[in-house]
Image (cartoon, rainbow, N blue to C red):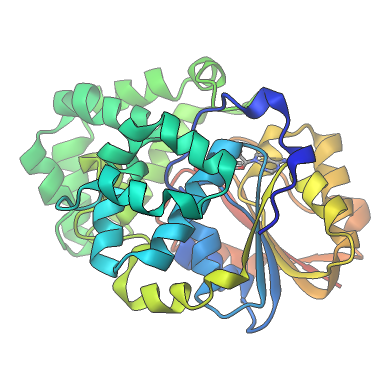
Length: 365
Ligand SMILES: C[S@@+](CC[C@H](N)C(=O)[O-])C[C@H]1O[C@@H](n2cnc3c(N)ncnc32)[C@H](O)[C@@H]1O
């Protein structure tokens, strides 16, 4: 495991967990990446869910990179509990089910963590005891939404009904009758106002367009066109846990496939740029870049893509999401990067984590 201390700058030491789950649809990501057996992949770590999901396809390396050490602490703890707990215990430890004494189990496995990660979780036993999937800032907003806002729009019975299996026409009727009230629309106008988003301290500096309308349309699509009963992202937002649907890395059928490849997972604390500099000898087969380009200005985005190209080979895929900004193949790089538009558009139609405006898949030529 890479524990490069030079990339662990002091300013990160008091960092918070922003994401205690990965809010990007792992099923879509795996299709988009077309992960090859024995291939080498770089994945932005976030909470770790999707880097672990990539392991299920038997790559020879997944380098999980994050500039926020708290996110590295999230993935490292997941790795150790996958290694040492049964499937049932993993779900209980993470906070999906109850039953296990989480702090007791943490004390049993903490010596297997790196010093920095151990110190982090030692300082945050409250997160362990509630279950670490509930520890992020984003998840805190979802809880606030679930406790304060949602009851003004729909009651718990309604939420359960929303998550029941229905056909498309029933979902449209449900949305129109039970959700699409003036309070629902007002909620979007207040919370997805450009200024609110910029002030939420989620790391974004630039926000474009009529966000409220756009986000409302995306949510409507996820609630009416896509099935709701197997959407873990929707379920967490509406009932603040995974109950009937689980993200890819937590599904029973994927547990052993991930577990047997945990030795292929390497962690890197630092920026993508630093990770590539530290591993310049490696050529990757694919990059899961999350939506990190949203946090960069256009010049930094282009420089990032050029650096990625130096660590790529013919056929390497770059996968990233657009949310509030649009980033896509810069024109002057179109001879080196082919945009797989059609595949991306089709996969995007299945995307259940509805925050994004588009999925970008680019293939190195
Ligand atoms: C870009 S954020 C987006 C999260 C995502 N939309 C979600 O909800 O799952 C994902 C992770 O990228 C990390 N990150 C952002 N910019 C980065 C960079 N340049 N290099 C490495 N990690 C970065 C953040 O710390 C965060 O943990």
